[in-house]
Length: 452
Image (cartoon, rainbow, N blue to C red; front, side):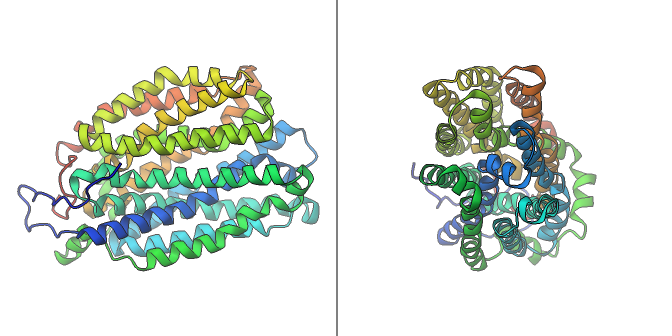
């Protein structure tokens, strides 16, 4: 769906100075570089999620399969716990010194950490040091991810014309879903082409090792970027915040609560789809490993396509309205999606995950622009990054673990659906509260300039 990115922003009423304008070539370059760099980083995360079953055997041997999976997913969740620290460090730095340095550092940190997983000795080689080192590396990834989300969200939104901000902002979740799609497809090819013994012995390392050249590409793309126009305007007017984190707590506590609330759906839904479902379908539902990965791949592909649609629709109908509609649909239809996915029948499982992915994509399409529009330029990155990563730590990191535990404890294969329903209900309430949180100051279709 072609979008015209040449629209000229209307000057804000009451602006001290007219906002700078981002030319179309610069806007496209920023969007491509930010999205592709984001792809590199979330490819790293996706690889771990789709290889969770194999990683469980390599780093946590000697226990039953269910306990192995819970241990591997638990290590995955560790990286989420430290993400708020990364958000504070990098969010503050981006608002004080610019978005570009943060985007350069995070792509190096995450791709380098993922490469280290690819060369990490196994439990059989070094014993308990193997899972211990895996935890340390996951912590490094978590710090990098804490800085990545806020900076990419802000850069995409600040580079786009106001009336195309939803479409431009959707490139963040689109690139994330594309990364997960690429990771899952690669893991599927490994499962098809290698024997289980080969995959466990050395094949699992291949996707992690690929993160190094991918990270280099992301670094080159981001190196050529300039600072965003709103941040340049802020510097020109000598209005850069000396303490963005403190300022966002003082001036926009309501917006931070709303941001955390709408994060619940994207955090729970995303990690339910891309990290939990593959192992769940194979270990609990009874599909083969190849069938489970194929089903997840199709669900992620649906999420990707409908995210683009969601971004376009949010530009047309408004972010708040789209968030309310999509969270309501998730509350109603998530449980039927899980019922289809747990029949043990491959076509039904595919239908369930495609529907789930489509609904999640529609929500994510308008999420990025909505997040950026909640906060002014002075502390926009900190405002987006901190509640998002706190929400991700609370709602997202523990989702695979909690889902596996609920299924095991209750014997109900659809138990994980209630986590998504709860998250969507929280986001629905947050979306309804958006006007009160912003006091009508930051609206879709208006420029994100330094005078907002």
